[in-house]
Image (cartoon, rainbow, N blue to C red; front, top):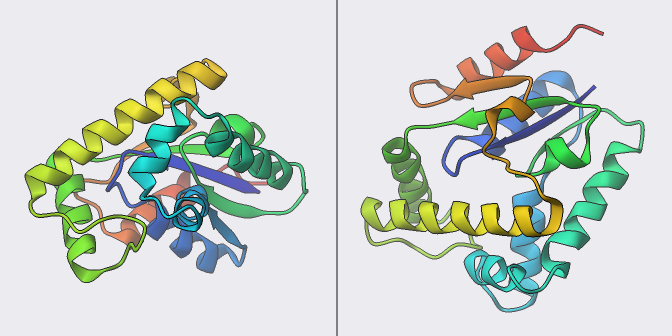
Amino acid sequence: MIITITGLPGSGKTTVIKQLSETLGVPWYSVGNLRGKMAEERGMTIDELNALGETEAFTDKDVDEYQKKLGESGESFVIDGRLSWYFIPKSFKIFLDVDPNVGARRIYDASKKGERDDEKAYGSVEEVKQFIADRVASDVRRYQKYYGVDFLDRSNYDLVLDTTNLTIDEKARIILEKMPKS
């Protein structure tokens, strides 16, 4: 079983894939972490890499090819990435939604704790809300340009889950309940 998870920034994608990985006993992958390493290797922030990606396809294509190969491996795993559902079509596709204020608060709190070294520290929740809007807009432009797809179109997914008021355990439980039994 392959589970692909995408969603809005601050919806808890990476946290829930780790929880699902542990519960199911399968590996997890994060496209955001891969892109974060790519940015770091180039002395850039993830936002700078995303901006570069609007004109330079390699910033997406390298990671996208990696996802395709994972999907063809025959292995079971959990992965979070904006287009994982697209590159791994034979998967249980999940979109995690979140109230923009809550998502911004989660990212702000994580930045204050130093939990993401590929992102800058933010001065306020409002600054994070602007960051989220800019990042999502950049993602939409890049994915439309390179693949003609819209990751925000909820009809692409088998499950759409609003995580605004859910704990990590609740998110994982709901996903496990909704997963197809194989």
